[in-house]
Each structure stands twice: as structure tokens, then as C-alpha cells.
Length: 551
Image: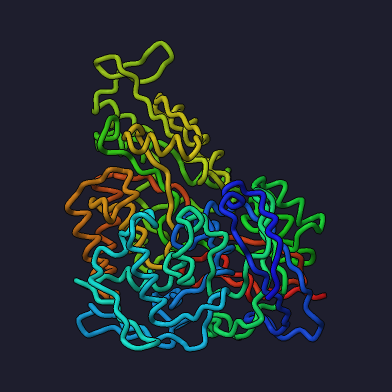
């Protein structure tokens, strides 16, 4: 280990005096999805990525798009496969009691954080304890049914629940549940939350961060605990130096790959897929995400969406298939349900409900009393109030052409129903103020999770301790009961029945939401690069651990 001059131009990081150590490593070997390459591997690899993490702390970060970056720094106790099964990773084994209220985890020995601290039962218990502190984390919803986490022996700990909760397994396998070095909890709180100096057990460490420009990682030569069932190998990463260049503009990312400035890009612009899908010049892949799709949550606590007829009218007003097809050039699918179609609990029978019917939508608004028109042609009620839907989005989460999509939806609703539907993006501070004041009529959001129970809990549960982003303000005992049935039962068939009923109740009977499109992850690279992986449970790009580029 050698000291490195930290060149961050991030004001917060500079003020905090973050100290970062450089771990130098080099190794080559076969990627999990490719035959061994006899040619030497290049030491450097670069990504052009759309999203810069707002936080580098795994249990603070709330950006799905930042996960493929942070996965290079942080590991999980388990990993989740596409069939709903869990497998050991940092854990050597785990056991669930007959009553599903105790999960006992035995750790692999010899795992260390990048600062040299050992991952043992004491470190794990400390992580679980600290991440229940609301001063540190945004929400402790995952711990609502947690009684205690206790040390069993030096490398074994037990999670004891007050009642069964499958979200604990999701926590053990997710980025948000990744352990960090015990010493990091002794740092300044702002420094801990920002996280650029936080130490994980992942295959890389941070060596340089320039705000708005790039993040440079260096491989750990002592990394020996990859999830081999997924990666197909163990040992250090193939590339020594891994650089993420932050290129928010779609055209800039595409241009950077085409000009050879980067080796790969994520969030491939839909309009450029035809270029990168040419196998002779590039490699290209795309995968739909699990969890919940990008969705419009109607704020049912205030007009106009306190009226189910208005909610149904917006659901039925427009042809989302055509809009999504046009905006994403055929590379994304319109969502049909509150949960993703790649989630094991998705019910295909729900797909016929969102068939557009502008005449039915107009009749619903007439029935709801919006029969008049003002001087600009917009609908009004008997009091002369205009039917207005001013959608406001948090700029932090406006990506993947969502600005174009939401504007297209606004224009279509205006044309079909004479509704004053508008959209604007505001900074996070402004959005937080409006959220706290309940000064909004709808909320656009998505959440990628390996087990849909976690995403649905935070977006729909009426208990603020659980549903901390239930910004549809849904307070419905039926919803809570269905969520509990899916969350507290480890039997897949029972969970499937609960989530099937949930989908129909939320979308059809109550019209609480309008699903918009199914999220997906994609990448394009030069054709000689191998070793890309998708997370089998979430569909996210995995870490760059297996990537190999010929020298």
C-alpha cells in the first residue's frame, strides 16, 4: 500500500479531508462467460457512464444507476439469482430457522476491508447496529421486524426477527446491506454519508475522484472471495485500473466510445443502438430490470387525484406503447403492471387493462364534474377551477430520456383530454421542500430490487417507517395486508398469490398508479472486450470484476 495524493475537486470531500490509499494490483485470467484468452490482459479499462453517484456509501446511495459503479467497491453477504434463490458470497453458509424468524450467517474467514480491517461477526453486528440509526441512514424500514442481531461466535452472527420478513434476505444480498469497515463509523458524519473514503470488501479501491469528471479505481491484489457461482472464478480483478468517466449527455457517451476515448458505455442511447449492435464493430447487450417499473404515483391525498375517476381517466387517455416505442426507438417496453415483468410474481393477465380508450377517459372526467372549458380550452369544474396536473421531478433522477418521455405524455394528455398537464425538473432541495409540504400532485419513481417485496414496501406501505417513499400518499389497509402476505411468507406460491391480487387491486380497482416503462440496463463496448455480467436478480450491470481487455 502506498499513499496517494487525493485530487478530488468535490468541495465536500475536500472540506472533509478525505484520505484515500492506493492498492496496486495486476492479474489476468478467464472471464466467467468467455473462454480463456492467451493474450495478456490490458491494465486499464474505462467506462463512459450516465450517472455520477451522489453518495459513495452503499447504505446511503439511492441511485439504481450508480450500483454498477459501487459494486466494484462493496460486496454482500449473499447474492440473489433470477429464480428467487439466495447463494453465499461473503457468507460461507446461512440457515433459516423452521419458523423463519432467525437467520444464522457464517462468514468466510480471511476477508478484509480495503483498510485492512477483518470482516468478522463483530464487524457485521456493528454494521447492522449502525444502519438502524436514523442519524446515519435515510430510512430504517428494513429493520421494522428486526428484534436483534447477535454474535454467535467469531465468524457467525444471527439475525432474530419478531416475525418472518423476506426483506432481510434481500438486505443481505443488496448493495444497501453491504458491510463497511468498522473504523469508518468513527469518521465525521458528513464524511461517512458522502462515502468517498468508506472502505468495503470489494475487488477495487478508490484512488482518485474528480467531481463531475471521473472516478478511478485500483484492483486489490488480495481479493479472494468473489461469488464463484456467479463469476466462475476467484482472485483479483483482471484489470488493474478502472476509470468511470461521467458523461451525462447521451451523444457524448456514444461519441466517446466511437472515438476510442472509453472502452465501454452504459445506458446506451436508444437512437444509437443500431450502430453499436453491429457485432463486427461493437459488443452490445440489454437486460430488463426487476423491482418496480418507472411509474407515475398519483397523490391520492389531494385534488385532482383524490378522485378515482380522474386517476382512471389518465390511465386510459393515451397510448403508452406508441409513446415508449417512439421515445426509446423500440429499445424499451411500456409497463403494464406495478411490478416488473421479469419479477417472478408478475401476472401477465393484467396486461390488457391499460388498453387506451380516449372516449372512456373523457367520459370519466365528465362524470367527475370536469365538463367546462376555460379561455385556453382546458377543462374546468363547476367552480371554474382548471384541471391541472403539474408534474415536478427531482432532477437527480431525471435520466434515460425521462424528460422526453414525460413531456410526450404531457402533450398526449393535453391533446386527448384538454387537461393542463405540465412537467418540469427541479433541484433536489426544491423537490424535498415540496415533498415535505405535500405540494405536488404526482410522483415519478422506480426502484430496482432483486426481491419485489423491498421495492413495494417503501413505495406503497402506509406506515411511514416502512413506506418512506410512499409519495402517492396511499393509506389503504387492503394494500398493507397484501404487502404483509407477500413479505412475511417464504413460500413462493403463497407470495405469488398475494402479489397477483396486489397488482390487480392497485392498478385496476383503485387506479393508484400509471406504470410507464420497464427499466433496463445496457452496455456497448469494443468487440474485443469480454467478461461483462448482469446481476441475475435485478438486471443491473454487475461490477467490472470479470472484464478483460487484450493489451
